[in-house]
Image 1 (cartoon, helix red, strand yellow):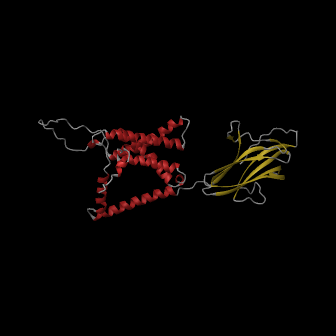
Image 2: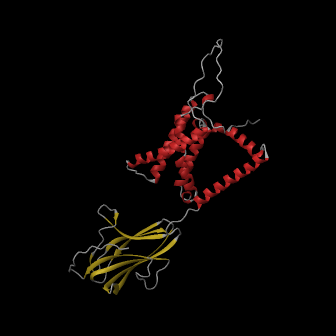
Image 3: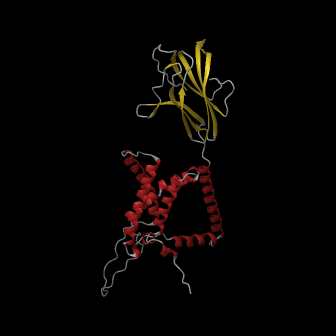
Length: 358
């Protein structure tokens, strides 16, 4: 006859020794790591909800569990030990905290621990960034959970803190389904509806956050001597046919997926009556890309002018969807430009640095 197998025995001994409340804290840590780091999950409304709960509660709860492994002493009438008793020792005064105190202290210590860890990270090469903060808080919480488990298991069973899940469930079931009076029944219904309404409101606020301003970034960068991208030192002097690179960048903050078209023109312009008159122009390049919310696209554009002159304008025009047949600075969604000088051959022009203008 086959024996029933206790599935709990299949777990490692260290896992089996975890108290239920600290095991739940460990599971919440791994849940947070999953919803923040796994692609697909980290773009769902689950991420801000789980992340906020993780910052506010688990680090503090694990820290309090490590400090106070004992349960709070039960209130009872002291009894004098009998003189004839072999064990005349007085009961040990309790030093633990009860469940309500633990919850309050957990919130308070979490709010204190998170900024302290951020302060320490600020003086490290990793800095205060998402992944270092997440991993540091997770490591701290798991370490405190391990310390709290060891300290709690070293105590006698009757002195250990434990969450009375079954007692709470029994009382809640009795209050909800077996009320003493009709008034209690009505209050129970109101309580349940209030909890459901509050939960739905918070879920909606997290799942449908208020959208901020919608915009797209359009910019030009260059590479410095260290290979870093900077908004400086743009090419300004060319000979006809000479090529020099710049980096064109687009960032989507439109709260929706967008299709972009960028057109690059080289123009000979003059100012007349406070307006810009285009005397001649050359189309240099055309780019197209599609970006999701908060996505960035960059490409290297090599400027190769074929017309000569001083203060020629390299004009970069950005459009949503497609570009019109006659792209201009007036009908573009965004525009930036450089001023360059182009000579025909060995001649030189005064060095004039260009800079992109929004």
